[in-house]
Length: 403
Image 1 (cartoon, rainbow, N blue to C red):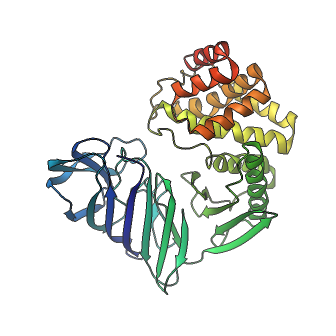
Image 2 (cartoon, helix red, strand yellow):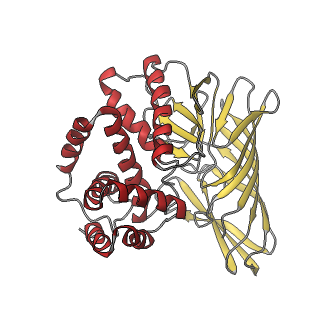
Image 3 (tube, helix red, strand yellow):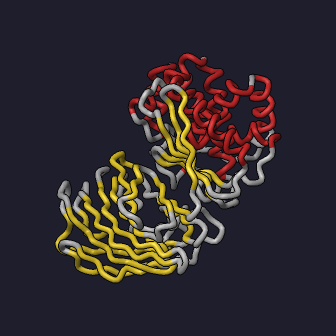
């Protein structure tokens, strides 16, 4: 399937009863002749009606094996005759349920906090479907405010419209009855910071300033003037960590933040903001190093610029002690126990080693060209490295990926 899949979703959220009722219309255009499609949906949600051309059968088909959707099940659609390539088809899903899962993770539907995304997933999602755009109408109790990736506009007392024209992987919707907003602008760079009652005021001020600084730093480094505004949402949850979607950064609660933790808070923010640039490679395989290692490398470069070379060198020295015994980046199972350390720590350090090998100027050129050409696989990246820094550098780095 191509990259211009488009969702139009009307969803009714009842936070008190933790229920979701939705109709999702999806426009798809397969790249190849397609006899079957598989969609993931959270196990607490049931498809009651499905409309699609040439639809032969549809049924639930077991637990999802996609690494970030542990509580999803597969819904298999079969078509006769098959869907033809480069032809637009409309699929309409009617589904509903009470979302009681994900007590430990990122996404949830509770009276205090709503955070919906593909980790649930709350909409029928095809993991092979590529990127998507969307329009989502959310009907919810009027005391709730809504924010998400894309533009969120309150259309009436209890209906919000989210609209995303920039292709992305996910549809993220967050809401709370006490959602507050601070807007902060420095010259031409701005953020909107969203948070709920009880967040640490000092930490909020730190994030407000650091996010602006990091956004400006990356724009200058990557020579990208497009990303002038981001929304930063502080989710009132301790578990699940942070993540990024185009124009949106989600962070976990800062209520227990202490001043001595400011350097790590800065790096945390810098990593997630970096994903506004470093995203798009496959997330369910070892190729995710092209997302995570580059975001971590970028955050540490920002860390060193902001806090000084000594702080960076001390941090890197500590992390290098974790490298012995870690498996190679190439081929690592994304669900392996050591995958996080490999893709975040080891990958970032190898990029610092590469920078030392080829020099800062060529490294910056490499990063900018990777972004400009939208390189999303390792073999193409190695060819780009060879073009910029020579065959020996590419051969050496390929060896490091295998060690």
